[in-house]
Length: 241
Ligand code: HEM
Image (cartoon, rainbow, N blue to C red; front, side):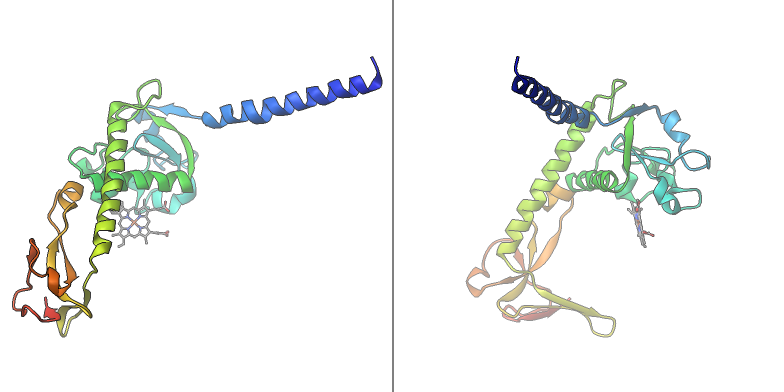
């Protein structure tokens, strides 16, 4: 074999090694970040009381190392209740005591479930992921449970509905509004007339009724579902509220 053949083989081997490491091994490793499984009792050890241990927080069954946020999550911090447990629900309820500190999302609306999922995004952006909590959201093998999948689906539905609502609302402009202690509240329109309009998707999104003030054009004033502000004339462009 000539010298050029040896060089050829060496280059081929080097290339194969590079290919293996960068295109096969690396994606495989990236797909499986180091992940530890926790029981709720184990997770509770990392609640900030032991100075020697890091502080861990669970949300939707994902566990993050929040030690660098010690001022929030350490003992005496405003958000210490989130440490050493999964209190997913409290991220939207704001109830940081007793039964409020639960991981169940039962009865929450799709926009609320979306908001919990957004908190999880915040933790994955801001802190280091360390593993999964075995229980409601992950099974003992670390596989997502039905409960997690349905929460993800509900959050996605919430996001879709909010997007749709936003697009619908952009079609009809909001009223201007101001409020002062002295004069109270006022809504007004530069063009069109202030009317109260029910948000069509709000019940599906939040489970509650909600209205907004819209500026309606003259030709649309007879449209169904519009309310005139009490004490305001049909053709008044400003109303006290
Ligand atoms: C549902 C209610 C609430 C939840 C779930 C919540 C949750 C949190 C969490 C988890 C953090 C820490 C973020 C991090 O790791 O950097 C935080 C920070 C903070 N929260 Fe809240 N919060 C709530 C309500 C409030 C309210 C009502 C106020 C104000 C009156 C407030 C003021 C703050 C401030 C100022 C910080 C930042 C502190 C800093 O960066 O030094 N939060 N919140």
